[in-house]
Image (cartoon, rainbow, N blue to C red):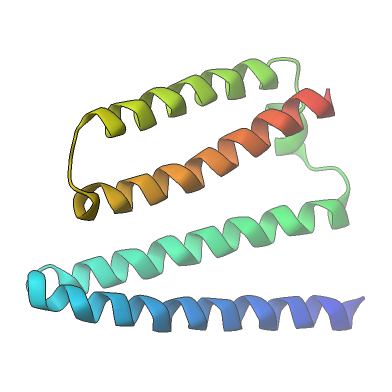
Length: 133
């Protein structure tokens, strides 16, 4: 089992490196558009990718630990389904507001991608809270 755990860590590091290389190619194209904001955008993209990998890693390790206090306190609690239900409604409203802005795809694409990732977490949390109860 320890060998598989080490292999999973190596896969996470390699995935992070792959994301960094891909983001570098995307940011190089943005340097021509806004050269003063490109390093900040690149650093922010790397930071967001690292946070997502950490979250995915923690979620993947939950079954290994069986019981965690934050899962019992927030997600599978009696009020967890209401919490995620409200988050789901807020997410739908935010994505609808984003769609109503009538912005070109280049401006709305990044926000829509972040909304997509947030929606995945909200939907999975909602499903987990309803089934886990």
